[in-house]
Length: 174
Image 1 (spheres, rainbow, N blue to C red):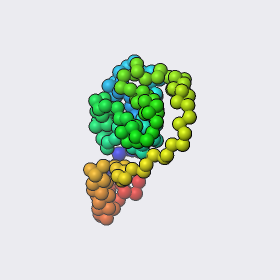
Image 2 (tube, rainbow, N blue to C red; image 1 turned 30 degrees about the horizontal axis):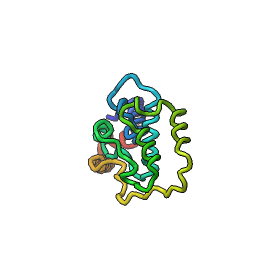
Image 3 (cartoon, one colour; image 1 turned 90 degrees about the vertical axis):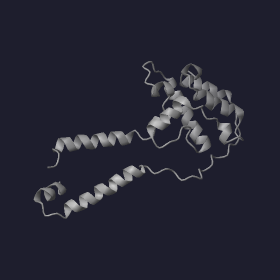
């Protein structure tokens, strides 16, 4: 028998909420990924650094398809540098983005006002070329295993729709 309506609605809400997280974990500061309790606005400074890195390079600072792998990169890999991907960008900009994405929150600007001051100190950066378009196709929004699961679920649903069992027909029409 199908789950009660309230259970289906709760399940749908949970699926929607988990999908709503998107790639947020790719922007988590190391202290947040570790589960530290003393968190402050420097989390947002780190996230801003990852957004700037992506805007300027066309790639994610900590890329990956699985949350656990990405969080491990955030915690243990060296912070990527703009100059490694876009050597033509000004050194001052590379230093600022690295400063925003420092692993130690004490080394990051303390808040948005400090970030604005750091950006103002860069002065004019001239005309920056747009970030290159990644040559590698974007990974699918769902993994291969999830695609296989959806194909299997679709085949099962089709089979249930073509059965003579009245319980299955009632469930399929809900």
